[in-house]
Image: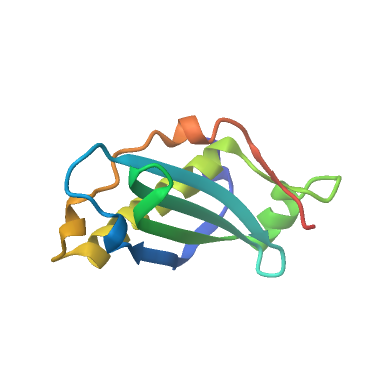
Length: 145
């Protein structure tokens, strides 16, 4: 895997949003899990962010459990400027590295969901295993705009 060629540290984790919506929760019925994944960039801190979003629904467009978590990955300054920065001013996060960041962030989100729902009816809803390679199929190009 190519992500080991870039020096980085997992330096932070933020719970951006968390909500339990009792009025939308039904005890029976099929559950839909809506997932989202995005990446961002902080050039001054040479940090890449990976944000995961999860929404559990029993009725379409009526979530009863919402979680949004952001992982912060500080890139070695030399690697950030010499390996990630492209000639056009954009920044490249290789597919392998982006997948690794996403796996770490999703795993953290799984733990956050458990901790925030422990002792409640919502603790039965777990984040299933997710094939991140399906979600991150290409290199990620980030622009500072």
